[in-house]
Structure formats: C-alpha cells, structure tokens
Amino acid sequence: MAITNLHWWWFSGAGNGYSTSEIDIAPATVGAAVALYGQSGGGTSFTGIKSYRRRNPDGTDQNIDFGDWTSWPPVIFDLVSSVVFATATVSDQEAWTIMRIDWWE
Image 1 (tube, helix red, strand yellow):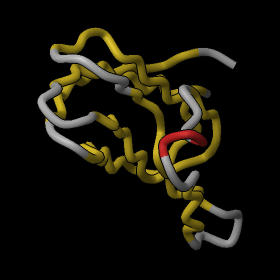
Image 2 (tube, helix red, strand yellow):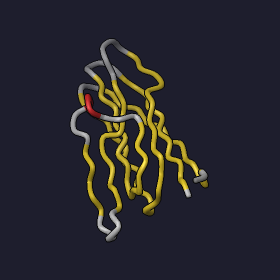
Image 3 (cartoon, rainbow, N blue to C red):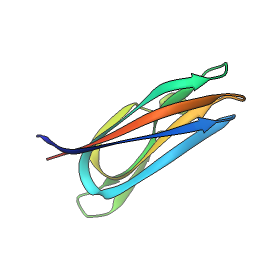
Image 4 (spheres, rainbow, N blue to C red):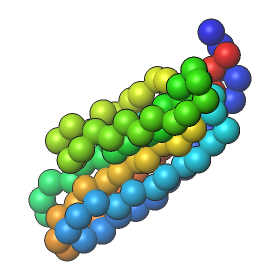
C-alpha cells in the first residue's frame, strides 16, 4: 500500500470539557492521527480520536465511538467516511491539537 494523499488540520479547545472537530470525507482507506502540541493553564489536557464512521462492505456506515477521553486512541486505520478528533481540557485551560489523515491505496 502507498500513501496517495495527506491533509493536516489544527484546532484549539478551552474550558472544562471536550472540544471536537469532525472531518467528513468520501469513503476511503485512511490512517488518521492526532497529537496535542501545546497548552496553557494548569491541569491535565488530552487529545485523541473520539469516534469515526467505518464504511461496511454493504455500503452502510457503522459508528465506532471510543467513549470518554481515557479511551481515545491517537491513531486509527480503516475504511472510513468521517473522523471526530477531540481534546479534553479543564477550567481556565486552552489546548492546541494537530490532526492528520493519510489516504492509502
């Protein structure tokens, strides 16, 4: 398999809770990755893949949700039509996240 395309995005989240960024794509085999690249304020912040939509062989989509932030993986590889990247922050904190999707053939 070879990477045929790749895209990068970034977003930030602040306050007590989750901030998400959903990337919808035409169904494709991709590797998606996310990383926390900075934060301000005290406390813990975390980033990961909150969920994605797997494209099944019959053409239907199956939502794969990883639940709360303690279960978010940093990378997935599958046939997908959407990826939801997320950052969890605490009060008086801001965090910056970088996201990447690689298309494979």
